[in-house]
Length: 226
Image (cartoon, rainbow, N blue to C red):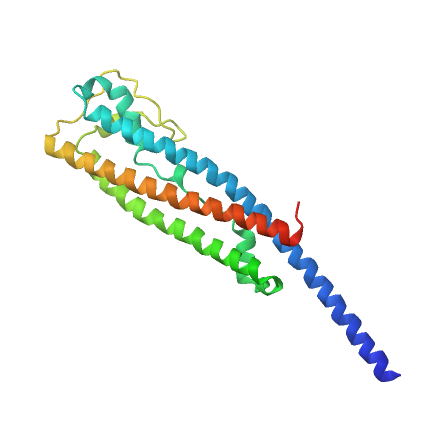
């Protein structure tokens, strides 16, 4: 009888631990689901922003290579400033739950191998997308070097409000620095580089969005989430 009581007690305790871990698993998955759902909304905004940036870069190139760019400085200067910005176009994931899963060893709680594999692949691709930002930042530095030969930094300085937002130059006669055809050609090449990396980042983020949406469907199906 004593052996039976001990065995039964062990079984009950084991079941209790199993129940507790299952509840923790569901909590982690629900939290991760909420994070990724928030990520997808953020991705859509950034994809739209990158599409707008492409149109802006195309317009800037068109105006600068037109017959009289000096007549369009009030339009050109704001675009020239915005072309060198990166933060509005960067995806920053809600990775609190992901970090907790990885750093606390809680990944072991997720027993569904399909779910674990999907989460791991998503995490890897998030980091791959973020890794592209170093390449973009390098392109931005090249662009700024070329832009310094064409645009007046004093005009740029007057175009930033107290929150560093870009406003149109107050002076209708804002002018360029004297620049050569070769310097314009170099600037065009740097704009081409910005456009290329912007398109590549948009492509990769679009692929990540599809993966995130697929992961959400898997989590919803396997864990019956709302």
